[in-house]
Image 1 (tube, rainbow, N blue to C red):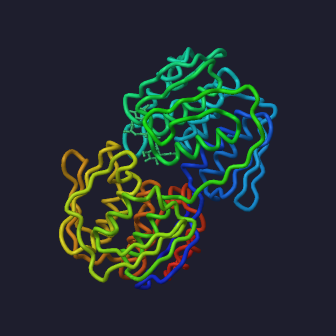
Image 2: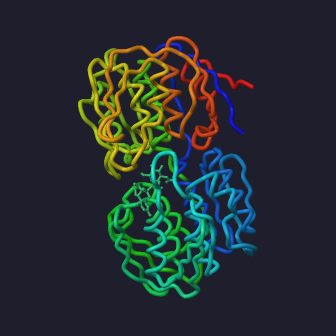
Amino acid sequence: MCNRLQVRGNGPIYARLQLQGSKNGTLPCMAAALLHSGTTVLEGVPMIADVLTAAEILRSLGASVHIRDHCITIQAGQLTASDIPRDFMGRMRSSVIFMGALLARCGETGAVSPGGCVIGRRPIDYHLDGFRQMGASVVQKDDRMEVKGRKLKGCVIVLPGPSVGATENLMLASTAAEGITIIRNAAREPEITELAQCLRNMGFGIYGDGTSEIVIRGCNETVDSVYSIPGDRIAAGTWLLCCMQNRGELVLDYAPVESMAAVLQVVQRMGGEIHTEKNRITLKAPDRLKPIDYLETAPYPGFPTDMQSLLLPVLCRAEGSSCIRERVFSSRFRTVGELEKMGADICITDGGQCARIRGGCRLHGTSVDAPDLRGGAALIIAALGAEGITVINDTCHIQRGYEQIPETIRLLGGEACWLS
Ligand code: UD1
């Protein structure tokens, strides 16, 4: 059910936060638990709606799932189904990564097509072509996909683009393939390395993760394992940008420092002073923010597409004009209309791919609608820096990826409460 959140900022932020575990790292590891008939434990898991949806998917397949204190214990001894129920595919697009694990474990899987999405066309042709290359049959009828392959064969798969989801799905499926599978032009995102480490702990041979060529060797005897999920790099970026917008100083503990170079560089370009230790980032925000003349999103290690909406409200306060080009998804500036209601001056050009932000304005509170997960989080940043009170509707999108939202806003010095 969607909630409404009332937010008011209170000027400079002086705070220390413990980051939540990575959302995009947790979901594929939960799918990986299906590959082992014993116990898989994931620690440091964020308590967010997407994780609860993934737990429901596992239960619907017959696995038992216990969640306690950010720790999930999954036992996938006997599975009772190999189809992902329709409702989950609609609720969370990344439900699709359960297909690779189910194909490996059960020799078949089915689901409705995830279809389009509010951030643009999101086909899964790379995933399905990869399954076919391993010898599976893929039948698509109306909105349903059926994949069957009891004897998958290792092969060389060259992805047309470095898709994160396709790389994960094919890594999961290929654990059951005979021989060795090589994925070329693989995604290099840290979440791929997280899945690879989780699979290694279970006994699989995974090599080359973090590079564009990943090698997967299956194994007959998987073992019980425990994997600790690292901190969420996008949540880290979200709270750093809150501080940049409001001024002040912020310390983030449990931060995945190494995977945040591109984001930290942008914070520094705007005038932020960054100090990093092993798992900690300290930011001292400047009084006057510099604009970003040009920035484009790119696959890792480039500037993440998930961070671009979050940057928009901050650049509204910078002294000068900025430009961000979206190069990963086809339409990801839906939050601009909501920021305009708060007084932002942003022009979308180049067929929806480029946002030109005229800085130097102070946003004002009003009623806005969260359009998607990161676009919604951008509205929290905007609300914390705005004059007056902001009411954010449709926060179910934000709750998919962020835990303890009002509590975190209060730790940042703002005021926040749920409205009925
Ligand atoms: C994941 C992340 C998402 C992030 C994105 C890019 C999760 C749960 N989600 O999404 O937060 O924004 O990576 O970093 O981890 N594509 C195709 N065909 C395919 C697959 C992808 O054309 O079969 C295209 C997409 O339309 C998009 C691009 O490839 O333009 C990248 O998408 P992809 O990396 O697959 O994103 P997701 O895995 O869905």
